[in-house]
Image (cartoon, rainbow, N blue to C red):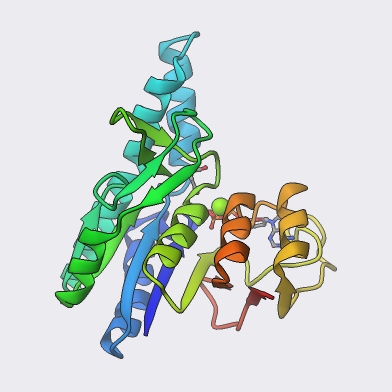
Length: 241
Ligand code: ADP
Ligand code: ASP
Ligand code: MG
């Protein structure tokens, strides 16, 4: 069994959060599952970095913004690997580049063109959890790129496809996909199952819970997506055919 788990920013907001998320990954690894963990930047780090860059320059080049923003996810990846090691689980972190994620050169909204998962595969075969920085890749010239806001979801599915994982599980701060944003509409209803196309149209209309490109990639590669809460045991939502 091979699984890709993705943790969003609110699931990694503090050292305690990182340890809790690491514990979820470790429990699966201890049962014999090969686990890849994809991480977002902690908490509101990306928003804060954007504000910081604005304070430095009014005319920010997209190339430098991407070079800067990639660091948020890289910090999370290293911290997650440290947390796993602290829990006595072998783990190693990778940037998007080290994970073999190549994109086009559309800075700020790059699309993944290929994934060469050799190093991830080797880490899994060596019995380690591979922790990958989401949201990023490199273009043909070796420049750092980012996949657009919310793009760590897409990193997770792209790796699931390249590694022939059985499941891609998106851990987030709500316990599944609802018919409307449950934070704005307390009466929103949760889906137990939702098909790719309905999920895709919701994501394209702005349902932040999944990046639209992630849903397209899952559909095109028939990856089973599970959306779950990091903080409860609720079964969540399965996105599939
Ligand atoms: P993460 O940091 O884990 O990637 P996001 O903030 O990107 O989390 O996405 C989760 C948020 O998506 C939820 O907190 C919720 O407010 C919002 N959301 C919007 N529409 C929906 C929906 N239809 N179902 C579930 N959550 C939704
Ligand atoms: N950190 C990035 C963002 O805030 C990517 C992600 O969270 O998926 O948009
Ligand atoms: Mg998100």
